Amino acid sequence: CVHRNWAGRFIGVDSAIFGNADGSYVASSSLGAGYDPRTRAWYKEAAAQPGKLIVSKPFKSVKGDPVISLSRAIVQNGAVRGVLCVGISLAPIADLLKEVKVGETGYMIVLGPDTEYIYHPVNTFDMKFKELDGGAYKDFIAKLVTGKPEQLEFEYQGGERYYSAVPVGETGWTLLVTLPIAEANAAVTHMSWALLVVCCVALALLVGIVYI
Picture (cartoon, rainbow, N blue to C red):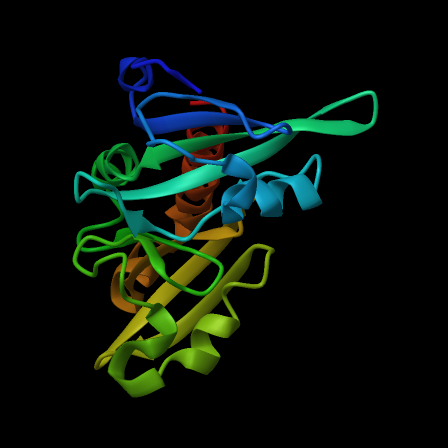
């Protein structure tokens, strides 16, 4: 193996490893004797689906920070030569979304494929939208995370709210914007601009996590 301490030079990159098909690897930190990348889930899943970006669920890094991993197989002459896996901190995503103003009290949310929180101003990444309040919102959220743009009005925790959702590329994530119905109606002529902002942020997220 080769250990090179270069991952931290790139903003948002927590760690990186390239696992070769022969079991050798190059990594941003030492992984210990006997480490074989081919036995790891990130390698197996990416190698089985060449050409597809594999996005993991959020997990805690060795530093205790929430991260995700992005994995993709490297193919040459029709054969998988190895898999590149990069650990991405979720902190830059949170920093980006915190700066986006939605009406007076609205905010943005990013959900993973199983409605786990990638970003929420209050809820943490180990929580799932569909499990909140004993699963009271399971059917509602299923109508938003469909893989295509959606708009709904719904009563959430005692208040009527407007929701708009757009998928984030091939990540399996969904970006939501939500605000009280009263605010949405008061600014109805500006909602098309709000949707444009959502789409732009989704694009920024996609570019950020895929090409970081």
